[in-house]
Length: 369
Length: 124
Ligand SMILES: Cc1cc2nc3c(=O)[nH]c(=O)nc-3n(C[C@H](O)[C@H](O)[C@H](O)COP(=O)(O)OP(=O)(O)OC[C@H]3O[C@@H](n4cnc5c(N)ncnc54)[C@H](O)[C@@H]3O)c2cc1C
Ligand code: FES
Image (cartoon, rainbow over all chains, first blue to last red; front, side, top):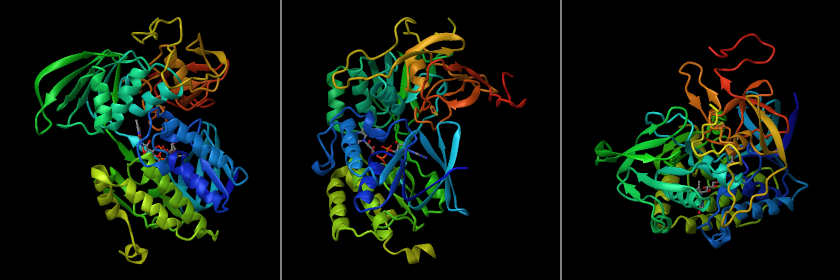
């Protein structure tokens, strides 16, 4: 079987992975980026809105344009970075210190790397309700892929489940694509996302029903509607049921970090609610308890693209430094400064609490704990 | 017309976004492929599942035991909801497999049969 070797392997070509690749390459390392999608960019290529965050991380630029900027930067190092798309890293075998990968559905091969940056992003959550398995119940990411990447109408009329930033933004994007949004239901007593996004869709006449959730989906072979109901303080259904006619139910109830490969590499993991799941412990260089593995972006905790890009830079910088490439003095501190300024405010405070739980100053104590 | 299940699908034109305030879609070359024997149009290089969706097809497989319909869900090759038989090969992730001209795409029933073997829980 074919085997590829590289100095730095970056798994995942989203905001974090592309930034990591650019940074490691700029220090002189040879980098291989493996991306399972048909094109690199991760979540970024699905976002049509102007991003929030800081200027250094392209705030005010539309998501898909940020992906282009990163890819241009990588292209300037094209002798040292290669990107394999339509390729999934399917496992890591500790005994052999090798990865297995699959290109398309049929071509398998091995990858050997000196340092690996796991930037695999996040996976969507699903909530239980009768009929949630039939076609027409789609994750928010899937809806975005269909309409924003491939220009296909995901449906005619949608019920959005979840009023966090993703639910709100995707509702707006659905309207841009010409899809009617029947309502947004949110189990919590308040909107989770930024108020600007909520205000935008309220102005367009979309009801945001707080303390409401979906009770069941309707339809035999495909979605033909949904039944929604109010919830009490204990999130139990109360009050009358209401039927919504729709051919699409979009689930935007949150993300969890994608961390299987980190677990397989024996990295010490920790459940951190503020980071939305099980994540790897890491030091200031984004190195995990396995000295050859780094974590960055949503895979290390659900946050934002801006922070994912800085974490990617840090991981790329540390991996290159660990390989002996000279790196600029003070760069790590500068990146941490950027992270700190991104992590201001209410959401940022939660993230900081989470980071405090997983950040390790001295591996000695942890490794033998 | 059983498989024409999209309530809004017209069957004639592809269900594409015609006008968008921000995005301009550059589709690949228009080609034809087969879905359960029926000739459909799609764009080369785009995921099979997107092409089917644009044709109003939402049911891609049927589960082995409960015979529940499955369509697409994650669109990133992670959930196995969109498995179909493509050119005779079962369990192909149609959401990340590019469409090619003349491809034969079939609804998968059960677990599928690996070509050349006589095992598997085909249509039980
Ligand atoms: C609707 C929406 C709106 C958002 N708006 C904003 C915003 O305004 N501002 C902001 O800062 N952030 C925003 N975000 C968040 C931002 O998009 C993410 O935080 C960011 O993209 C995370 O980057 P990442 O590189 O960690 O993950 P991703 O972008 O998810 O990239 C991970 C990549 O890894 C690949 N991958 C996973 N596993 C494997 C494997 N085993 N082998 C190969 N490849 C693999 C995936 O295909 C994917 O491309 C938004 C997100 C959403 C969904
Ligand atoms: S839709 Fe999830 S694997 Fe294809």
